[in-house]
Length: 270
Length: 204
Image (cartoon, rainbow over all chains, first blue to last red):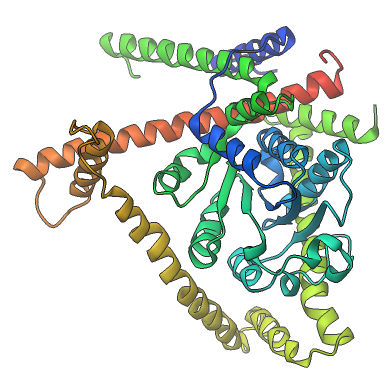
């Protein structure tokens, strides 16, 4: 067995910090950011029964961060009595989106075909976004379950983006950009997003320019949204663990720098 | 505990074991992940793309024009034979041509024109006082552009502006890195929550 190295101790320390924070299960007092509030207000103030398209544009690897985001937004949408059309522009997000939509719809007693439908995956995301702008019926002749488009009461009212209040892209990459470039710019559909923290700086300029309606980002965004809808979904629970983990990382960075500068002063190789 | 949670828990521990060192359990879990992902994507592509959009319209509904995308798709596969490889250039040219035609105006509008127009902001607020945010946007934009202007040596005023631009860039990179660390931590916390709550039942 090889000897334990310093990185092993750092990992073990991080593991312990997160473990203790999660077992304590304390809730941090968090402040709602303006962007999260904007998305909440938008959904809150829509007329009851409005149709929102939720696009699951993520891979399976980002599920731990995506799940609380998607749950909180979907819960709010169903709670307010709005209707959902679920799509996916990444194949890996397809079944995840389907299950999350089904789960949250069941919590509020919503019925498939009337209150929500799941259309599933279409390849070539740019072509899919543009095609839906012309006709969602022709882009998805049938839903994810294989039910023909015309047999679902919700879809009988829907032709294209003109019949949809907004698209909410749940993403871990740059796919939301394409919703803005092709959906928003060409067809005028409003675009909001729930994205992983790593993507927040990518989408900030689009919020500032008004191209994006609102955005919630990362576990923090999910925790804020859970606070607004007064429903736990895993985001708020993780906030203490995340904050303590960040403090731990900062301490490690400081210790690393102290060791580096001390060894350099002694003339050793850093 | 259901079988799905048990398998997911064991595979999560197998992946995390890499933090100690490379080992057969990690490699098995890694190979399984890649295999399952590719298998899943193939199944989705077959049912949602080839069946729904090509074979059913062509062979069931009799949409004979769909023979064109079928032929173009088959031409792509011609790359595997050296003698017929040239045929694949036709669908590739079509894809690049149509892709560029669709993408260039959209990207120019959304990523350049709209973003440039968003930087045209008033430098004073309604009360006639300096608008700090507007000033930061203008100074940040111009100094960052100065950094990427390579037609003149970065000396004098241009050099100072370029140096300021590097500061803005570093702040952006630092913020992005911070958010990325936050994102990775969230992923780890998500898996820890699964292990503690669903797998080991140590927390509620």
